[in-house]
Length: 144
Image 1 (cartoon, one colour):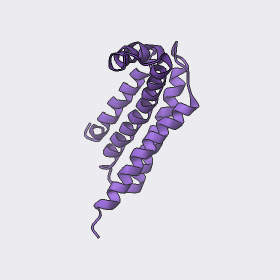
Image 2 (cartoon, rainbow, N blue to C red):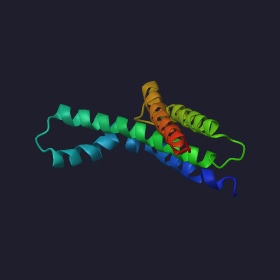
Image 3 (cartoon, helix red, strand yellow):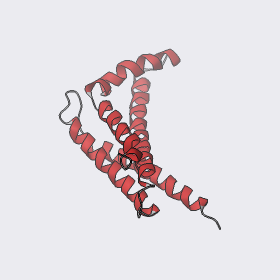
Image 4 (cartoon, rainbow, N blue to C red):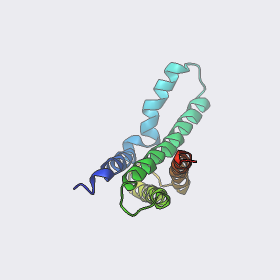
């Protein structure tokens, strides 16, 4: 059990992402929540503006949720004996990107959801950005 413990946060976050892939969080489901809130903030906003912000919000969520996933995987992998920092970062990125692809495949079976290769790229870009930040942070933490 102690070997699995460092990976529990990443696995739980994967479950959260899986839940976000349900029809409840599809475009229509999230729009039913997001658009009324946006109308409270911008009551005179045009339909096109509301739809654009909703689209951008959804894409930012893709990027962010996979950045978080990569950080959580890296955190778990950082304690694996014999795994150097470079491999921990690359493994976190690979696992996150693979999960992004599997999540989009999962969405092909969910009513009201459609898989998107562009979303896999966006998810993977979020994971890559987080891994790059981790790598750069690690480099700055080294003594001169």
